[in-house]
Length: 225
Ligand code: HPA
Ligand code: MG
Image (tube, rainbow, N blue to C red; front, side):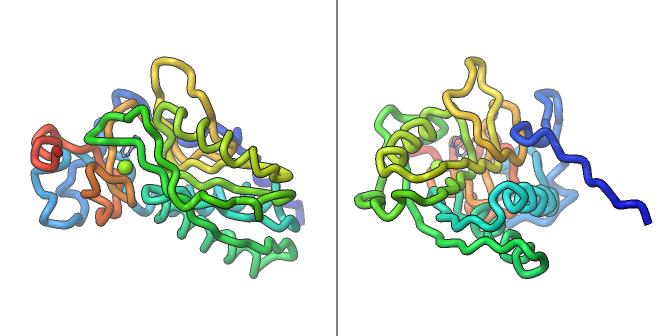
């Protein structure tokens, strides 16, 4: 039987969501009733996130299989993506002759207030990353907006002299200027709009929403600080 060749995707591009993509109407899906009126549309349904994550896990396995990796989960926005990605890497590891011994470490960043990126980036839980020396590090981030946060984090991690650093970002925003940092593994490239759900927040709200949605004007007002 002919060997089935699965075509490699163009790795760092991700699924393109165009600026004119209207999204899905909210009433086509289930979502928490406490957010009714706070959202404009579903831009990426949960099931699609899961399917894309499965493919990213395979790309990561193909590239890094047989290496030890330290997964560096960027909290809080990256926790759901990281958990699902690690789960899928584990499943692939069980079912193939590649196997990746993984450690998972958490780092917390905070740079957004309302929908604006603030200048001062706080890195919490990053006091001593010296155990990263000589290791293969996979940084897992929920969303890359301006890329500045990631750039700062990369500099910080590089100082601990890991052997290799790869970045997986579920979402990358299409911003006007070119990004300071483009992840090696991208789930989706999205328009430059403020999105929430799947652990991405607006002032700590909406992490308890499974789909990735666009927040409405009234939602922004309601949860503004
Ligand atoms: N949503 C949530 N958090 C974010 C975003 C966003 O669109 N961009 C950068 N951080
Ligand atoms: Mg946030």
